[in-house]
Amino acid sequence: MRKITLLLLLVASFYSCGEYQKVLKNDDVKAKYDMATKLYDEGIEQDKKSKVKKSLRLIEQILPQYKGKPQGEKISYIHANSYYFMEAYFDSGYQFERFTKSYPKSDKVEEAYFKSAKSYYHVSPRFSKDQQETYKAIDKFQDYITRFPDGENIGNANELSSALREKLEKKSYEISKQYHHTEDYKSAIASFDNFIEANPGSIYREKAYFYKMDSAYLLAINSYKYLVKERLLTAKEYHESYKKYFPEGELAEEANIILLDINERLENYNS
Image (tube, rainbow, N blue to C red; front, side):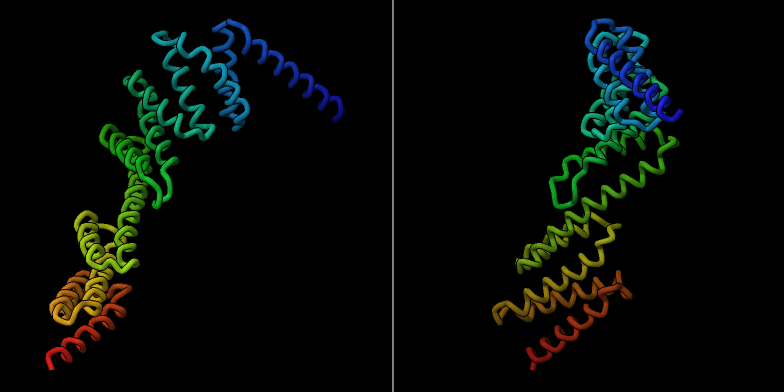
């Protein structure tokens, strides 16, 4: 019985493939539409990318013919969502964007705005790479949040947007830290200053204050003698700023060790 069932499944599969190839190659737009929507529905329901991929091939053949027709909205949505389902996020981001412009009154428009933004979120690279797609994703999420403040995906949109902003903050912080690492302390101080001003709620804020102070301290002790005192006093001021905002910070103990050395050097300088 099991062999018979397997044979029937194979026969059905071959028949199905034959029908698909037949529809794919002929010029019957209605037949392509019917099979495309059928394969799409089955693929989504069964979580089968192979069926959605087949549907997508048919849709791309007939999409222009349905522009301005009643079925155009449905087929355009399926087109965009097929790319999304297939994890082809560059394509889905662009297609959902087109859908929102073409069908602004669609009952799928909120979903389309969100999925367009999430598509760009998915292609946002790691922080060390160029962040063009990250900025675009943030803009798209902000557009969604503005248009749909009570939308179904508002919580998710805020959460993902925050994650993207944190990535940008990390990139900016790491650029400042690189100046410190390469002993370009003047550039490090200026860069950390800019970071602190631009990112008031950043999780890297404490480190920025600390390494700004540390950069000033290292700049001072590696300076010509006539510049040391003034620069040590500046480093001490930066320590006061750090302690003001982070009296119990994770780097407080290390900051205090640096302060002790600053004070000792100042005492020796004055003696």
